[in-house]
Length: 179
Length: 451
Image (cartoon, rainbow over all chains, first blue to last red; front, side, top):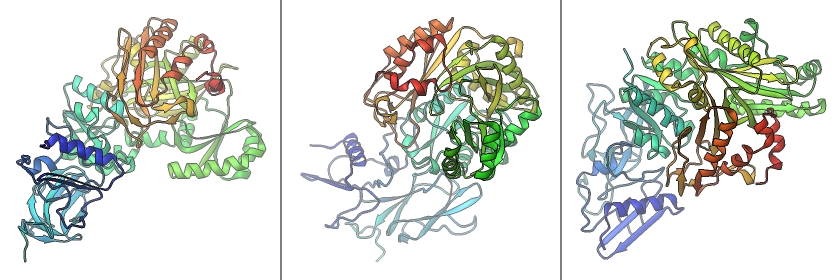
């Protein structure tokens, strides 16, 4: 049986509304794992978030799935309610903690806080969000390596919008591991 | 700079209402939504939606900084606050001015003046309009007792920072005062961050009549007639009508004049409402408060005057002068509005959030439904329970009541409990149809409704 994108979304919806924090579905070579409350490592040390390992075509652009400008176009959006973290292909997003302007560096000439390949831990500051001249740091909240940067310096971001994708430490294929 | 894109800093039916007005004016709309409302009707209808925070309104709809950031980030040039949330928070109005956004409402100073009910009373008194006999602020229980003996029981204890029917306690005799004073002060502190209380004589046979106003920045003020909102439960309006045809025309004229005088005195800009209590025993009227925003029940006024109040609000904020004068305002026919809430009338009106299975609202000439609900919409436990406003317009009050009965009968909602069954009984009550009601009538008769 093939799981379509909308099947996965429907499952996510059900999990979000349920009282379960963790869900794992295995069917043939398909495996779907969902965890609530952020990045939770399962006992068997499988990838966190959702791992879709099957011949179901994954979304071409993970950002399409993770960046969720609401109410726009016909894009499918994950039901990313409070505390539900969604990651495609083993990547974990770092979400904007508030609405505002994203800054990648502490000042215009300074180097960015993080780049692709930077190793981060939960407390690493990965950027700033400015709201009415007040700057708030963004903590990575996850240990791993920055794999994708989804926003640019000075960009307006919404609450909950994915800013970075992180390959968590201990991911299966080790890509991006810095040693 | 003129308005071309409006950020709607609210949710639910009023967000839908504002988005429609923006589109009718040819302006773009941006819906500021909480995470909970991402997939709601306002998010779908607006040209763009932007998520401003988590479900809890304290972290989203009540955040001045998030609203301003959302407006600036989406290139909006104006902010409409709707009602509730930040609509009467001078901080939002001030922040908008600071960041060169047009606040669709009055000046922050006006909001501040009218927001403190004691200051508002003092100000109105100066223009020679009566306020309900009562006190300036009462500092302690002893003072409260002295004032109470002076104005006579029963009295109302009110929070100076309150409004919209919140923060009110009725005290019928002296020995209740001690307990009521303590709890009222504590509640006021918790709800409004200000424990200042004042007292008013309680008028048992009262009607709640309010006058709709529009003012522009060039000093023009017009009224759009009055509304009768006497049917209330726990100081919350349940059913509203326009015009207030059950009180004498001479009294109505006095109320309109007084309301316009208040607005002119404070150079009122945008849409506002002056609320009065009329005493049916002696024919006197008293200023209650002024609401510096669009009100929930504004549609009844729109129906009888044919004016779109939300469009007018946006035009005024855009710096335009009123396009009509007082003599252009004609009140025609009678309109009634019922508030449809997700509440269980058989369980003390407790809120009933949940998934709406069927949503079939009545249609037809003279029927209007303002709502954000659709089949499959999930009513959130985070916000107030208003699902829809059902408004009817007919040539007179009797026909309007009949049309309301029909429309309520045709309104089908399943999945969540609503106040529709209760409203169906309400509009059939003989006292209601004959207009023999006052502000406590509904509360007293509730137990007689066979629900």
